[in-house]
Length: 207
Image (cartoon, rainbow, N blue to C red; front, side):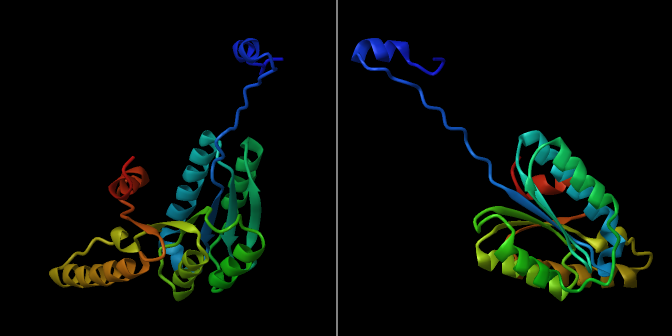
């Protein structure tokens, strides 16, 4: 009775009802690269994932989590507080290990468990390893909309001599060239971890 449009019903002589269709939010898959190579910025990866999951919870967005450890941990896409705290519990147990097969894990789950291509995926690696870069390429080529939060390990280092400062500039130039090449597969946020994550995102995405 609540959805009957009484004015239209009176005008037409037929029962007319209002139909409501809620806008469906796109599923998001969070992928955290737990390789030991990422140890210098691993805490930043975990905190970033937790913060972005909280945003997803508040927005009512459903999300899943792939913790790419040596034995991968996959939490299927869901929504709500119980799901959020489940993912946070798993994140709290994450430890960098010898995992070097994130590309295989991503490809396998993208074809068997992830939401259909076209959904959003949020990849959290510093892109230090060939495997993590390959995982990005796989997602992009499969048609996923990829955003990469890449904590820059170089931003943790403060050079103490002119020689070290020059060396760091060269390292940074090499990293920027690599990220420019990888930007063909997704939107990459090169995060200077001395800045808040929100500020780093705002520099790339207009909030």
